[in-house]
Image 1 (cartoon, rainbow, N blue to C red):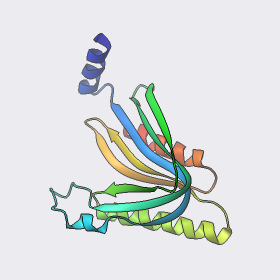
Image 2: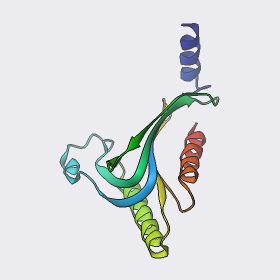
Image 3: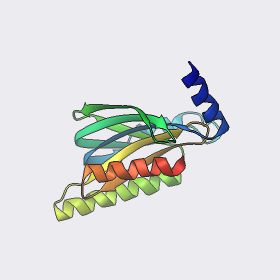
Image 4: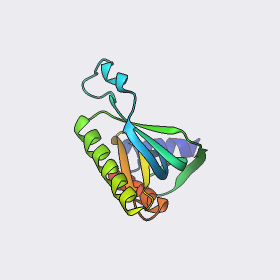
Length: 157
């Protein structure tokens, strides 16, 4: 009980931030727009996620990591994706278009050179500070894309 109270006080004071990384990684099979009818939903001050990126992976994995800014991870859960589509929601149209164009161009390069493209797509949520969707690609390995995602989360802490 004391530990929860101390962590909540540290979080509210800004000395520690609770964060959650919810992302999926794997070898990219296909990228497209997803759920186009979401755009017809009413807009709440431009904040609701209307733009959706649909990513299909070849043997992808989904991760949820939670922790605090002073470096300790509380939990890491992982599940296997079997030909499931992963939807990443964006509220800003320029960011969505930029990231979609980047991952599509990287996928074209990978197909031309006949090498795999690895990507991590998902959300970074930091309590009281930041919440946003991100896409990171790598031609080297899935672990490299994961490192980029974690590095971005630590940058926002």
